[in-house]
Length: 377
View 1 (cartoon, rainbow, N blue to C red):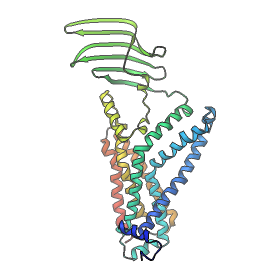
View 2 (cartoon, helix red, strand yellow; view 1 turned 90 degrees about the horizontal axis):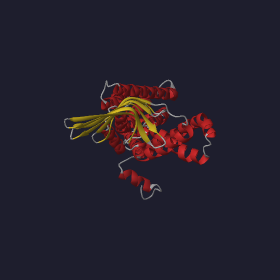
View 3 (tube, rainbow, N blue to C red; view 1 turned 90 degrees about the vertical axis):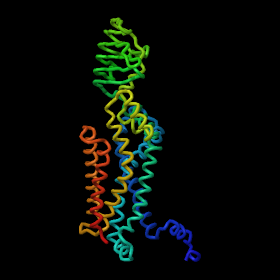
View 4 (cartoon, one colour; view 1 turned 45 degrees about the vertical axis):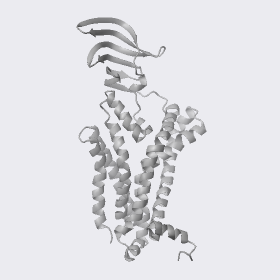
């Protein structure tokens, strides 16, 4: 057949990878429905986002090139990757239910192919989507998000972000530790400031100040109503005054790290960022750890939801395709809700971060295995 048929090259490829024509058919249907759903849904998202921000664009006189190339060109890939597992799930529900109602699933099973064997092209497609999403999220999206977030701060988020830190501890240099009872990024003023310097594990100096303020004219910190205690062996000296300029290895921006800064980091950069935060004495790194573990667990979500999608949509239901799509939407909602609750347990310290991130995948894997037992044979 290969020599006589015009599609001989196609058959050679199929035989080389051990696939069948039906596998290629399912893969084409899966990926076609997946990318079509992405285009349709993201088009709607872009329209809504543009209608919401159009006044900001006009008011800030944002150039069209910046809006298109700096914002939306980087906006679309981010949301495509963010919801890729749900897009894959919806695509599976849609085209598999159509196959079921066209009796294609029954014909395939009656031809001698087992249901487990039918899952092969689904898993190949979902693995491709998962690996592509992981690659983009680690190599492409971080740089794209830098451009997108810079655009938002310049043309959209024009008002200063009101940010206040309480009980701020940090090691700004080896052996130098600072403490602030509170700090506001709007006024750039901190209260009840302390800086300690250690040498060979021994305290050599300590300064107290009622207030520390960033002076924009000299780009330095000013300590007000301060006391400096210097320790030299058994000798101690005490200095006090009203105002003194200080040179510290920190900037007001260090107090207002953007909550979405992790979106601009690769997995390796995120690991280094967490280590640096811990070295500086920052103990509240739970949200960063959640992001790190989520990037590793995320690809498996696509595989698990694909299994659920095939199990749910491969059988005819009285309600038709609409009912199966509705079931898929409900399952998606439950998954998102479960994921958010699980993350809150990690933030509240009820669950370890790794357990909280992987728990939704473990639960839905059990659901997938249960539904697979009910799938047609």
